[in-house]
Length: 356
Image (tube, rainbow, N blue to C red; front, side, top):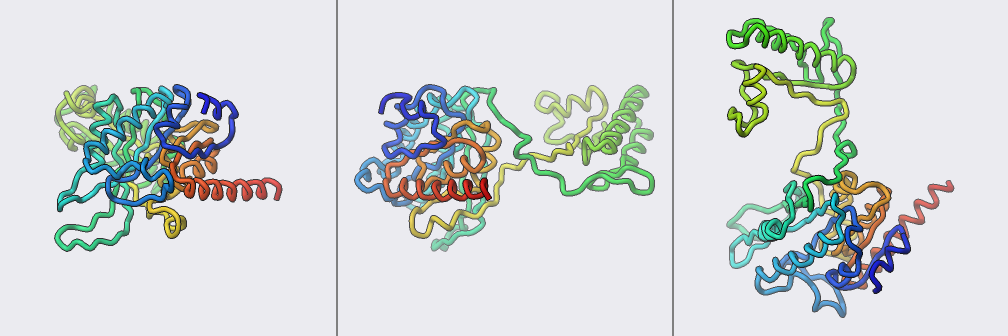
């Protein structure tokens, strides 16, 4: 493949058969906005790669070799990723000789040593699973690591915010937050405080009034106030490690506000694994729900999402559904055929909806 050749076509998507490291080397520098992938886990699953079975990652006898190969692949991913791009890496763990190997963290730490910046470790709670072992707890989660290559990166938090279910309202003439906070308690604490100065009391009262007005204006739906001597500081009372503690020391109060545009998801995602394509085609199919927030948050519309271990094409398909482009690489011709079929079905459905 001539370098840049298939990207020059500006196709909406590309499904490419081949060993991922070889294909990656044919992609131009800083051409991809988002990479989301799940490599074969170490000695855990069998994948149908046909004539390419000898190139499958995960069959290494030594876990160090497995880690080394993945670091090499993701080093090449770093080259093709834009400066403000993101890599989302899903990995599961493995028991070997009765010991949990810690494979996801072995890989993650090796990637950090290779220059990646780890922004999040998401726990994917799969909510179901079977287990034959009787001497340990049932395991139902995997890791999804969010890596970036620079400290400033594209992240559209508004795309993934969870909208509030309740809004502020008036109760007995007073504005009350989504969880019932009116500010009456805080106002009393400010007035009766023996640790706030007169100036701090005036400023705290004004800040409280501003928060209540912001609720009335629809800018926020909820808030919490921390007043020196009344409430505990979140996380730490040490000013060197907590900005909130410093604010409390300097002003005598601080206010945490929940905007009307909602809050960001937590780092625990409860998502049931995909079943439709698992039964007869692939052992580890990405559920679309797992892919949606990473793509929405870290890939601008119209840009490319790359999956170097694309399997049956879930990452590429989800990217297309969300108005992005997609590139999938896999060694298995069987999986690539399924990916093409899934994408073709989506394109036909999309075309029929356009002209309905």
